[in-house]
Length: 101
Image (cartoon, rainbow, N blue to C red; front, top):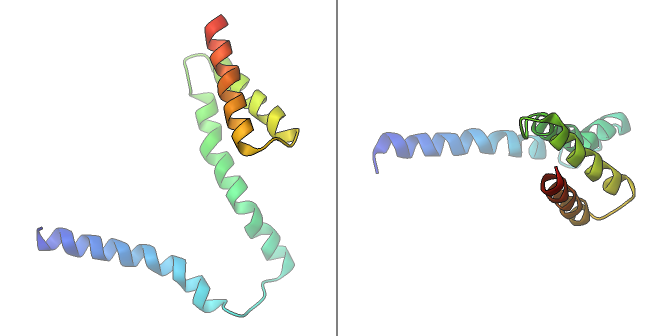
């Protein structure tokens, strides 16, 4: 392996490792304020929404396909179904929708 590629891989590993471990060392044994904890607990949901929403709009040429899948998944999730049921249910609804329309 070329030494430049090896150094590039090592550098990328270090750059990725630092932001993951820095908060651990800075906040070890400290309690964050409740307001900040609430914000940090909602970050995964906001990120997930930012990743999924464009896919809903651009899944097919017809936006209806994405909206049908999103609405079916939302209804299943809002009813308290397990995440696997939500995914399988949305797939089943979209399979039926694509078969009939």
